[in-house]
Length: 70
Image 1 (cartoon, rainbow, N blue to C red):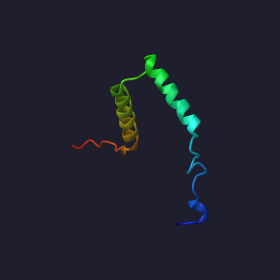
Image 2 (cartoon, rainbow, N blue to C red; image 1 turned 180 degrees about the vertical axis):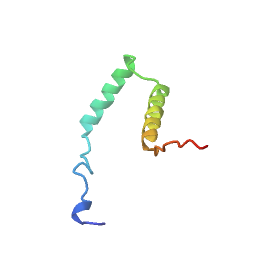
Image 3 (spheres, helix red, strand yellow; image 1 turned 120 degrees about the vertical axis):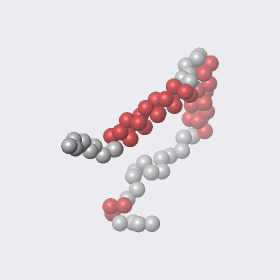
Image 4 (cartoon, rainbow, N blue to C red; image 1 turned 90 degrees about the vertical axis):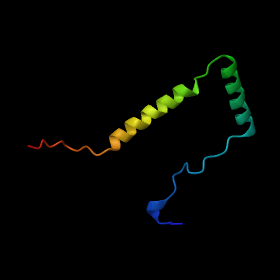
């Protein structure tokens, strides 16, 4: 492990684990959302993720100027 000052771990590197009560409450909210029909199909989520990835990759690609050859 490198313990030099410029290699410190972020403060949220090891966030606290939710309590059992918090986890059960989150599951209950999730079950209520499903029962109420407040869900999004996985295909919609996947498409949004794919589109976001394409935007990120496009921003990272080097932008070369096209030189017209004669």
